[in-house]
Image 1 (cartoon, rainbow, N blue to C red):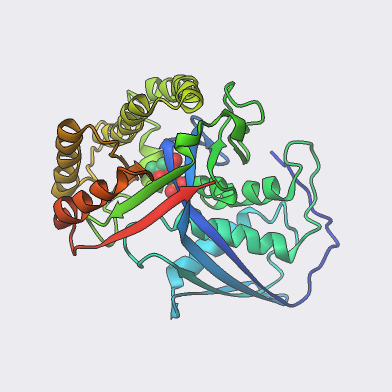
Image 2 (tube, protein in one colour; image 1 turned 180 degrees about the horizontal axis):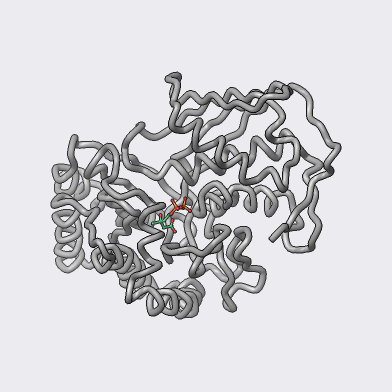
Length: 351
Ligand code: DP6
């Protein structure tokens, strides 16, 4: 399917562009996809304020195509290969893209190898750089009309979750009847007027339970949903969950929100355990933290809860209010010891 076509004669000159993009954490998870990076179900995430990728892209017009990448000053050949593959896949939209040499220098504001997903912020920043290089990037249908939608479209083709990082706040990717503007091709912001004020300032403290490479990548994980006997039910559930979440977001029902978000996180990991071959990305520290949160919540009634990415780290969520100080002390004293090296990243989302 060709959603955009560039002007075939369009050329860009030598340029250097610099862009930054935030990471995000999903509340309804994207897990499973179809050909052409189309999500098997709609997802919604919060964009983080501090976990970001800063990227400088230098383009030198040339007949030969090459990409060199540096991560925090060190050359990264694997990342360059990934980018080359990505650029080749989007040539249909940016016809000039293979006509030059690229030097891409990228840096994350969160620790390298922390297990915090860098593909969302990484591809978000790359897509923004490409948009800066080519403002004339054309649309030949009416689906993606704004510059941000077009950037999100390009980011999606690099990494699905990246397309949600182009906006602040709550962001939806994937067609759902519950959000009028939603699309499988790019993300859109969740309507602000539908969000109760209690959800507008949240902390997300990421406990680094395990640093380093995951045993199963997200790409492999998504593919394992193809033959997962429970996948169809999961995709249906994600659709149903949008209806439920919409109500929660509107009414500000924090207790229901907590149960909902944790259920989504555990479902993601349950899908991994029910794949063939089965795999488990949680570590003992992950389970210790979850059980500790549950116990503390039961004892105190405080609104502290968790979500998980496709990895062992735990995102501890809690609204910013007069109760947050006791939650913060609890995390530092009781949860932090379950991490590999006593490390966490204190982020937040606000809009
Ligand atoms: C568990 O976006 O990393 O974080 O599209 O193959 O790059 P690719 O996968 P990716 O998958 C993220 C999955 C998730 C849930 C989510 O962010 O919705």
